[in-house]
Length: 377
Image (cartoon, rainbow, N blue to C red; front, top):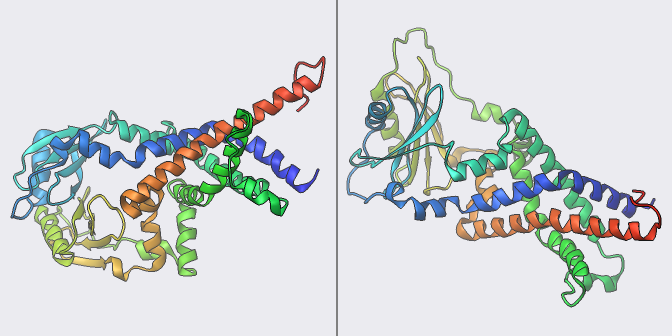
């Protein structure tokens, strides 16, 4: 068996094994691409507020308001999404997680969102875990993604023109031919055109499953180094603690806003137990989770302990933190999302067109072998 025949054999069986999962991953990725834009249209009543010429309410105030509404829940994070957007208090209990929307200027309660019933969060969990327990689903998704990368490589090897006069044919679809030929050409040419984009999407997607992928990206762009060392949270002495100070959270937010005056989006991770560090983050653009600056504060007095502004981070960490934006196309705003959507849609079609090619050849083999109901493959 020649090299290309071996590659074809590998491509066929890897495709049959992973095709359905790749289809699900790609379709859910398409749906999720524009989730923010769709939610802004369909949920504008509680996602947007009238911007006012005054400061936001302090996180402790919103935390207290959330406690009044859900006394059995504990607030884990307060996020401010922009001057014209609502603030969200993320809460949890033993049985559920709930997100509470507030007007950041007045504290008016707007909406409670349950991620278990939210369409786009369900789509995201299908994309990440197939709605299975995360410790099972992520490995199925991760394995299928690795197989898909191998399919891309083996597909390019098969697509590669043998002769010079085959080059033009390899880049086009013969639309005037019979539908099986059109399907074959579409599978080959579309796979080639999106190969680089979906390869980036697949690799960045693997970082959500396997930590070693993110570590490898970090080391590649830094020519070595330890990501855990650069991103470790400072440690403080908790032996003298009686309780965390609520005002420390407010001071941490005020200081973060002072250090990043041009930032549009902030989050404050609230201490969950005695002595927990207060972590904050600032982003230059609303609903863009890259170019972030991170700060760590003492939970008693809100004193700044450690600063990790974006411009002081290494190239490797910057790239790792851009991973979500790259994976969703968000890094290039709307044009990037459109590119990611189209690439994911074509990627979803590849298992379908590939199955049609395999099934057509299988039927053809059956006709050639008379008297044998099943092909000998």
